[in-house]
Structures are given as C-alpha cells and as structure tokens.
Image (cartoon, rainbow, N blue to C red; front, side, top):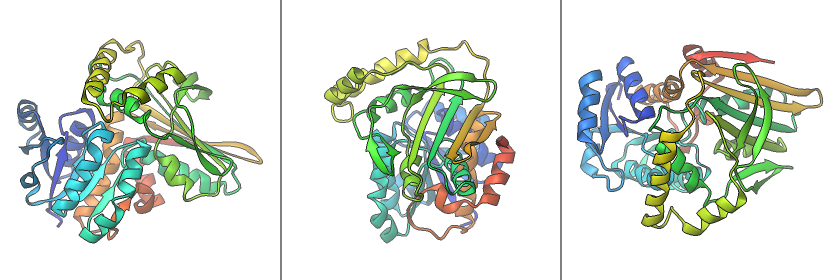
Length: 356
C-alpha cells in the first residue's frame, strides 16, 4: 500500500489546503475532494494532482473507489464527522481527522467495534491541538507522575478575515452537548466560556483564555490517575460566553434544526469578517502544565506556522499507514500510535519546545 491513494475531504479550506500541500511535498498519492469544483480546480492548478467532487452531507460511495485512506478536514465535525467516518468504514478505507470536539470523540468511540470488524483504523484528534498537544502533555505527566493537576492551553492570532467560519459554528454546536473537565478524579460537565487568567510565554504575556474542554481531556483522563485536567484557548481575542448564551444555544438546537444551523452559520460569517486583526502574532503556542508537590512544571511548543503545524501529524500518520506501519484497527488517537522519538522529530520540523 506504499503507493496507496489518499483522499482529503475539504482540501481547499485552511487546514485541508495545508494538508494537501504537505502530502504532495512528501510524495504521497493524494486526491483533493470537496463540493466546489472551481475551488478544487484552482487548488490542483496551483499544487498539482487530481480532484474528485464530494458532498460530505451526502457522500457518494463511488468517490472512495480505489482510496485507501480518507483524511477528513470538513467541519463542523459535529455535523459531518460521524457520517464521514461511517462512510470510510463502509468503503473499507482508513480514516483520519483533526477534530477537537468531545462529542465527536464519543461518537467515534461508539464506532470502534464496526471499524474493527471492517479492518479499518479510525484516527481522531490528529492535528496540532489536539494531537501534538496531547502527546506533549502526556510526556509532561509521565515526567511528573505524582502530579495532581494538568492544564493545556492554545494561543494563536486570529484567522484571516472571512476564514474560520466552521470553527465558530463548531463552538456553538459543542454547547449543546456535555463539555467535561476532570476534577477531583472524575469527569464533570461544566458551562463553557468563562475566562482563565494565565501568564503565557512571549509574545502573549498576561492573557485571559476561554475555558473550553477539548477531546484530549477525555483521552488523557482515561490513561492517568491525575486528579484534574482543564484546557483553554485564545484565538486573536476572546470574549466570555455567558451561561444565558449557552442556554439559548441549547434551546434552539443547531445540531437538530436546519433553520437554527443556518442562523448560527450566518452569525459566524459575520463574526469571521468582523473579528480582531490587530495582532502581529504569527504561528501558535501550546502550553502544557503539570502541578505536583514542587509546584508547576511547564512545556511550551512554539510553531512557526499554524497550518504547517496542523498538517505535520496527519502527514506522519498517513505515511505510516501507507507504509503498513500501523497494525491498529478500530478507533484510536495519536496517543496510541506516536512514540516519544517520533514526537520529538516531528516538533523539530515545525518549531521548538522548551521545558521548565
């Protein structure tokens, strides 16, 4: 399968384009896919390769003919993710995504038996955050095995105006479902959107991050006895989300009703255009922290380019799958499949790591 075919769904989005470019540069046999023929033509004219039309809302089984691996960059994952994973299972091809949503993680866990039966690997949370970030925090937790609490934060500049619409819609969809942190040894649901004050390494300094549980909490909580794990992020600038806003989203159920989903999407488009652009920050920073009797221990990952960082882990994993180097089947995460040495080598290609 070393020359097997990989299909990237959503190949002309921010992340999809980065993955398509990286896969091409690594000599992988990759096909671009998506709904917009004009955008696909523009992509392959610039970067080479071929494309196929694919509607994630109603995927055609014939599109995956001859495909060994489906890489899903179509968001929001709470709208399309499970359907695309089932699509891969039915076609008998492996699956990778870069999702962060806890509910998506739960849904793919529910597909584990079907994937095993089909001889398929379902790999979720395989980007930079989550993905590289969880591997970093796992190592920090192993370095300090008596730790009682852990934190994982993402800091980055804003998307270009008009981009990142799926990210905003994803946040609204996530509010409908349980968002869990580990606290005093157990997972508990929280109301997301409050602010966490922290001092981050340069160039961010003292900031307020949005308290937002992502899927690596669930993954790491099952692997560690550490009592508490929380995650948060700052993306350009953040505003707190009130409990009333969360309640309203739960009431209108954008995950269930098309009129509600379209309303949220229109609001997201407006927010993406009006978002903050008053920062010169490039790339992204991921900070992992573990607390024990000696205080806080930290690890900081600095990535030169956010999209490049997002593409790094899917590229490595896809190469391993194509080379037959992964025997795992069923639902997995990068924590199951990437060694410390592989993580260190990967990080060196996208930036640097500092341990304190």
